[in-house]
Length: 100
Image (cartoon, rainbow, N blue to C red; front, side, top):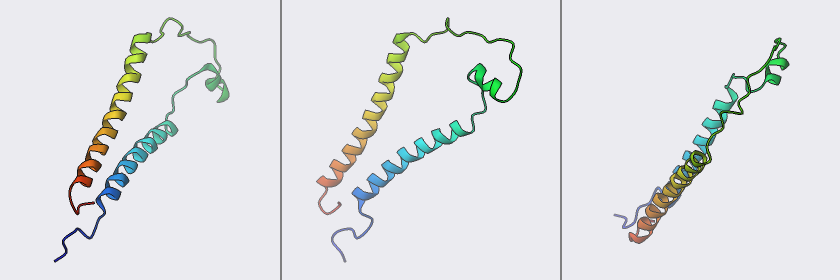
């Protein structure tokens, strides 16, 4: 009867799951951008040959600085939380004798 686990190597497995999750998220975002069929400018409409009479300016609809800072801070906190959980799991794994 072995005293230590033979497989899988848990530290490698945790790292692989983290990288697969991050890669899957990035892949999904890129895939969604590829299937986006909306028009973002007048030039996009002109490129496909549609007649364009005019456009609507979006100068009055600027996103407030407070909202942009909150959005960036929320993303940064989510990333830090992800790495903190990963670090905690690796730390706990390394503290358990024979589990790494």
